[in-house]
Image (tube, rainbow, N blue to C red; front, side, top):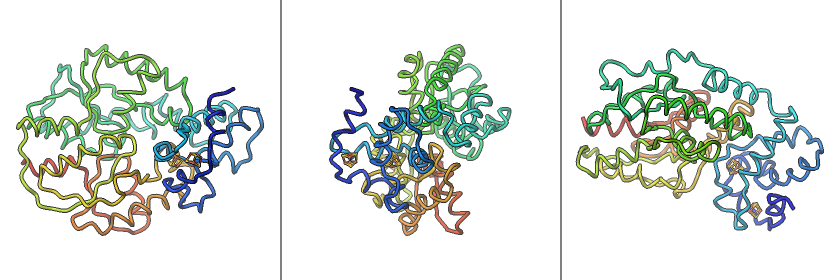
Length: 361
Ligand code: SF4
Ligand code: SF4
């Protein structure tokens, strides 16, 4: 029998996945992790899904919170990806999902941005090498929307004695393709990008975006092969430079909340250690568990209202932190900032690299 169907059979309807899913919460449990996976049988039988059922499959950011709590170890996000793969082949995926996937493949970014300005964050005040084997990958959200994160990251690396190069033809990591079941296209994308980076002689890629870090560091190996370069998360490097005494942060004496990144929850100690080295206390809001922002994997473009409502769950909880919120995911940052503007909400939020730079200057 099909392994995923076998796994679904073990569901004991405990409701644990409902409790952690922000999308289930804002839709009054109309769309739950469980309701999504239960559609697999129908799809494998070749039956057509109703529009509401299709919406259910696409109303997931694939944040992974449900996987983490399922007592029966049902691979919920893998099943959602598989369902999306079948729907995409049937030509039933949302039109925006098809368009964004095309943008990534044809133009190298989800928003079909002008590739010639991708590296425009790399200004003369930054020390950047032409020939280093260590490259910095900003990722789409930083390169096109939050260039200050790339600039502060490079300044911190420079202060710690690291002078990386840029990637002349940097492109989207392809996470959206993976999340939406465009597996073959993601494989081709991974192959092209890995071979390109290797052709530059790159041995290490420093990534600021948790999504890029996961995709280049783990997903490409599954999709294509292990790259000849190592992928390093920028915050891990900051932590190392602080431990080695190459960076000595001054005490800022503040209390902040932390916006964790779903993609790398297992690394959530790192930003807290960096903050502690700056004398910054953390007020824990979500008990170190995921509190999905509601943006990724196509939820924002396809279901803007539900996406905004989901973001508001996070924004409401973060609003009362004395000295603001620190983020280390550029996509969360971008999405939450956009929803605040749209709803007239104030949220004092900063990327951790901006704060660390302030403390080492
Ligand atoms: S991955 Fe996240 S958004 Fe998707 S069903 Fe699971 S908890 Fe909900
Ligand atoms: S957590 Fe797992 S077992 Fe419980 S309802 Fe959700 S899918 Fe079923």
